[in-house]
Image (cartoon, rainbow, N blue to C red):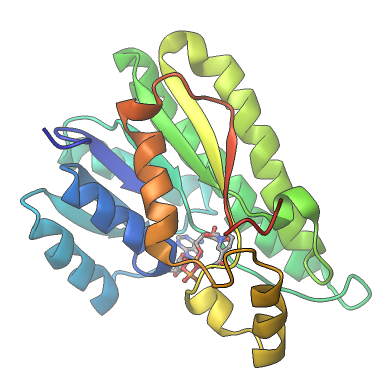
Length: 248
Ligand code: NAD
């Protein structure tokens, strides 16, 4: 029996990077996948095929997770297309790094909207059906910098710290109804998001990591699989770092 057999997972921002690795890992473990990204492009189409090759249903939707209206429409469509929703992964996220001195209001607002408000939008949209079925696992993609802070990332760190507060509150509110909510705090993971960093910054990060390498999207996906599955049935309100020991 696969760990997520018969479950349906909703994953935001999954066409590439960590979200894509989670979608593939969940599909391999038997979950049907409904995923969103800003556009339905060739990456989304290829994810549908790759995940579908595991014998599950996988469908991509173009939806901005930062928009309340778009998130409601997305979940309405998923509800019509899939029988139920058991797992929600709030993964969509962006960076707009700058020193506070140079950061403008738009950089702040956009990061808050995509990284933090998105989790509110999607959690609100799925909570009714999860409450009714008295079952659900919600996973919020935070970051080690949401715990430690980071120069040049005051907007991003604040949004990721906000996700931790949101996670713990949802866990406390919804635990008695069989719904768990946890956060993952990845460290330095090799994706398009970190490919933008200079070689100097990458080298600095890597020397500060006890395991001496950047993480792979699959490293994060394996922890998400644990949190999504009943292996973690007594785990809620927690933040699990996947950072090669960086935050130790
Ligand atoms: P990525 O940039 O490779 O992929 C993010 C995906 O989200 C993209 O496909 C993008 O199009 C999509 N997206 C962006 N805005 C969206 C929106 N408004 N609505 C829907 N989709 C949207 O990033 P990644 O490295 O895979 O990061 C995934 C998550 O993990 C993010 O929340 C990020 O903050 C977090 N994270 C990443 C790292 C890292 O080192 N890569 C570390 C800590 C946390």
